[in-house]
Length: 151
Image (cartoon, rainbow, N blue to C red; front, side, top):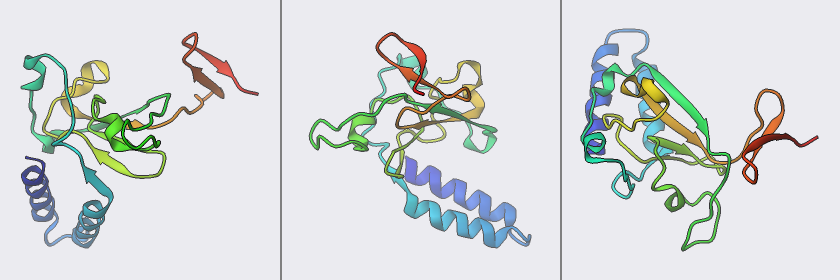
């Protein structure tokens, strides 16, 4: 499904930019994306109720990215290594950006993931592996589920 969706979105982008100054940029972005985004959609696990699993939308109408940090990193069960995509197969996001820089796609853009409260119908969920400070320099600490300063 992802391959067909990707081909259709690429074709739509190329057709819209044909004859414009943006055409070469669109070709370049599509070319890079084919080498940078790993397709893990056939292995992703989604345990949401069926009415959510059967929710789809037109990916051409997406208007936002919702960026989340995981506030942790996991080791893969089999590999024992961090940044193992298999450790994130049940993550409720379209994409995960791993600490080693890889981008994995867990769900097609047409799939409704139900993240970020009410903006899911028009947004793509992106999770970042790791724990990062907020704008006040505080870090998430799982032990007591509060922010702490690490100064």
